[in-house]
Image (cartoon, rainbow, N blue to C red; front, side):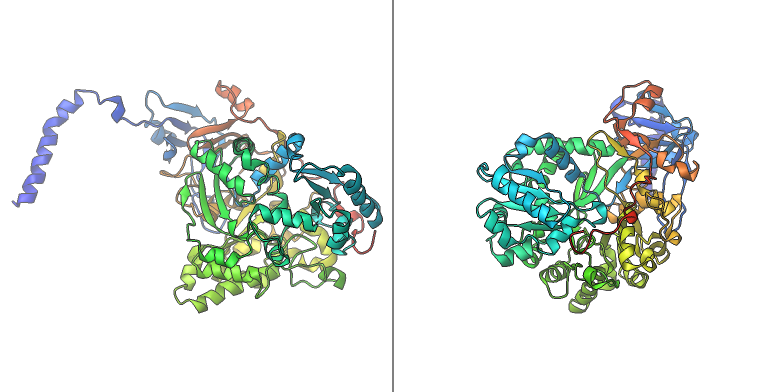
Amino acid sequence: MSRIVCRIFGVLLLFAGLAPVLRGQQLPAELIQYPELILHNGKIATMDDASLGNSIGRTVQALAVRGDRILAVGSNDEILRFAGPQTRKIDLKGRTVLPGLINSHSHMHDHTLQLWVRRNPQKVEQVMKRFTVTGNNYADFTKGIELIIKEQMARPLPGQWAWIDLPTGGSSGTGMGIQYLIENEMDRQKLDALAPQLPVFILSHPKFLLNTAARNAFLSIYEVPPTDENEKIALTQDTTINRSLVVDQYFREHLDELADALEDGLKHESALGFTTFSSHIVGLRIHDAYLKLVRGGRMPIRFGYADRMCQQVEPDMAGCFIRKGDVAGLGHPYFWNVGVTLGGIDAGPPQICTTMEAPKEFKDMERCVLEPGNEYHKAIRAAMLSHLRFVVNHNYGDKTMDYVMDIMEEVMKTDPGITLDYIRNMRLTSDHCGFYPRAAQLPRMKNLGMMISCAGRIINRSTPWLKVYGDVHANRIAPVKSALTAGVMTTAEGEFQVEDGESETVLAQYFPLITRKTDWGKSVAASEAVDRNTLMKMMTVWPSYYMLKEKEIGTLAPGKYADFVILNKDYFSVPEQEIPTVYPVMTVLGGKTTVLREEYAKELGVPAVGPQLKLQFKTDDKDSDPLKGEFELGGEG
């Protein structure tokens, strides 16, 4: 017998001799790790099938949580045997459990700040005063602007701005205010004459106008020389200003106040069932405030952020990317990087970038923020050549997506080390699905390994523009079914302004992806509809890949974070028309209950936890149809 075998045999004999002794004494409690929580007698959808079909994977009865992780899933008998003296057990009584919902693109912090602005007008006025101008024609707008500047802002506080909103025409972008600015009824020269010293910002999203004083004041916040060229590069979108003006002035000295506001806003979003979201950050102090929450253990939701700092009022975007390192996927379990971004590569209607034909007056209004050879093109190319994961954080039309894929293919030819497999492994992404991808783009997106994030409400926003581009292009609006059929993984996104204590349910907002109907009942490309199983995969397992965290979130499996929701109804069996009425009664993040609604708390015999939102289920507002009237485009309407 060899020496090694003899040693093993000896160890076995030793343990055999100790076995009776160990059976005769109780192990210290410190050595025993029972689960803190067991859910049992339920319908627990693990969502552990990541294929692009509609299979949701394994459904089990019970789940055990130890620490912030899932210990085990299985039958009642398999899981209940893990229970210890202190294990809390919840009898689900048949309720459905899902992984925590993941929102692959949402401006949660921006909604929070909008509420803060409404609630704190005196503090906001230290930075700017906001006005709204309405009217029946362009002359009314001009007169209103003049009155604000000459009378209401005649004695501004030091450094105070005048912010003037014009009508947008709602989310469809058809308002007269947009045309007023596009047609230069008010331009910089006129505005400078009215306000040579007062910073003035006029907004009718997505169109905006700054006078010279405002341009200089804003660029100076970021130590950027106030030249026309720097403005052209660094201020391409109104969101750069309207999401950071207050943030980077008032909150520079009030960071704790900003962190408290963000925490409250995220808690309200968790009440909808979200445990993870992704977005870019506009406003330097928002990033700082998130870090205060992370370091203090106060994050109510996990956040995979896209780094937009190289476009945060930065004239040398390409150089900035070259000097960055690739940190995609790295960070804290509650705050990590998903890549770099420049924000929007086009805007919203009518300022989108598309290959679709339209009357000249509309084509003239289109705007490609990204074009071959311009600063955005150079920056994206520099990012990819620097091996950074580039995340498109706003795209509406199909033409700009062509340009992005052109760059991807160009860098593979430029750098032999950037292979097709490397590009695919980067999982480059894009969002919104306003009028893309068109059918011809899908094989190319599949070949490059791209993912897209689509919004249910984009159907409302894009449908009115079929009057301009033609019903033949209806199948370009959130073409989820075609994308999945082509092999392009697709996720769900949405904006929920919940901080006032009420909100539509997540499923009410995402429901059009199943029905393919607008809020006013118009059917749009019915062939692109998905079933409820597919929609749930778009909300759980698939966005975990989008977030680079598929090994940690998105499904309910041993070793993954214990992020899950308990529903009021069975999402998988209720009649389809009732899907918008399904919502979480309990949200758990990392094993800790962040929200417990009062109705379920009473059933469990414990106090309620977190915000108690008033939920809305209605999705058929017959009075919201923007197609009933004529577009307010061309002339003074």
